[in-house]
Figure 1 (tube, helix red, strand yellow):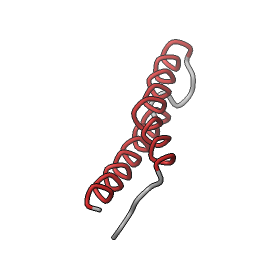
Figure 2 (cartoon, one colour):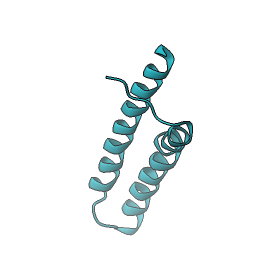
Figure 3 (cartoon, helix red, strand yellow):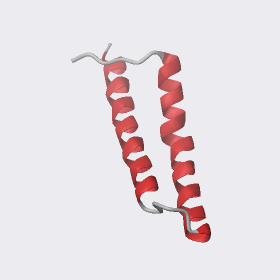
Length: 68
């Protein structure tokens, strides 16, 4: 199966997966503990699952691009 992303989509997803989403997850976990926000484990856990999914998509895309 051939799966490639455009450069712009790849760059945006890479930024989200490597920087933005992990930072949001850590921020929410910290603030939830300090301020008693709800779902202190569920929200960061969900974000971590999304980050893992995006990382997988990016790796598949990169491998596909390098083969061509």
